[in-house]
Image (cartoon, rainbow, N blue to C red; front, side):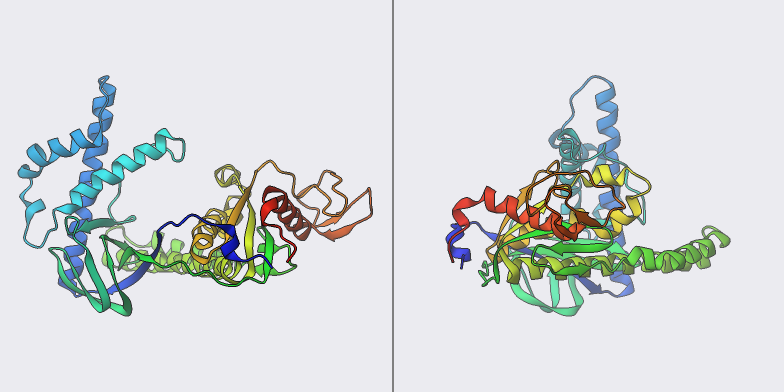
Length: 381
């Protein structure tokens, strides 16, 4: 049996992230909103200035923008230096702007967009490089002070906190270092075929169901949206209805994430040493308006992201199969290839007569691809 230790994985530091809901007083919630507003204002100012400088033939960068902002813009707005406001907010706003442009220039994302109030409100703070202690149900934020959480936190240290708002609630997230957990696995290799109807089909024959949270909640979301349109914009009822709609969307997201976390943890922690998964072109699939909703509900990108970092945590190895590899068209028995339409759910090989469920056949092909890609790991047991 192949063990995790035989992979000879490089000794790297492993981090994990934690996100939990904050229990805030009304005054603390207002203070959080002020920080998010400062972060949003700084980001939008930097983006607007970047566009203006670029249109004049200059080459702006976040370092120059940050220096000019701190020396000439910040002093004009005294509300940015009110008591209880952490001044690290603006620093991270420029870092996020620089990362957004970096992703754009590398082709990973579209051109940065202006932030809107109430949409993805968030900010990041630190303690000027000093470690921040976490533990229990209370933690001390730099400048802001003590805040409470609904659940107990592990006793660890972190470098920074990110605080975000969703559905009228505030959440805190941070990363901390952990020791890798090299668990025993039931298989050496496993192929994982992602799908729309089923979340994942494994080459072991196991099928992980897709909760299809968005599909099941579509009628509820449509009704809440219609009720919102009947309210007078800007009124208290409009605001309450908007929170109800946001809470419904948040529930869909939580159900989807829960299913993805359970599936990826099971695969990496208990199932196989080497995991083969396709490098899907998710952005291209989302461009198809007929498939976009189902693809978003299947959470393809998040599934792969979790597989990659959890494999490192539990001592597994991930093999990314080229997106052009015809895993669906190949016969896992004789390696013959034949075309397959999206409506065909059963693979029937015209050469050897092999018959199998479409997704299972693709998963077996992915496993065989991983075995060829990692021949040194395929031991005799």
